[in-house]
Image 1 (tube, helix red, strand yellow):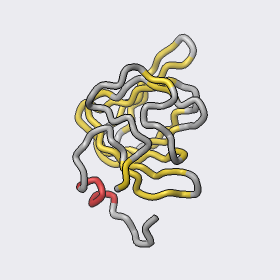
Image 2: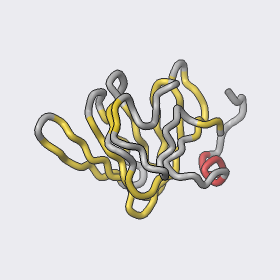
Image 3: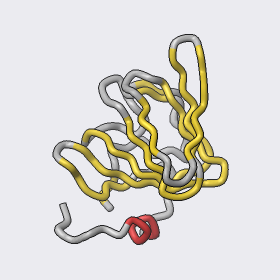
Length: 129
């Protein structure tokens, strides 16, 4: 963990990979991750943890499947949303976005259950910044 402030814009400028989160810092047993996203992620579910999203730039859409229904939430810049544990979801961004996520260290970016992971999605527990 760093003992100096971290400028998120500079951290985001330090990598180009999409859907490949970087661990900015840790809070107790949680990672604070940033990612650049564009296009679609995969449908996936985190069985044991909620997933927090903050949109730093752009717009993020999160499709949700719960019960027999499906809906989509739209997060503009500055918006936050929590996907509850056990809810299948698929983030996407047509125009690209930068996001911050907060989740337990070691949480997979493609959840506990997911569809086939395409080449443009990094299945990871986060990379060092």
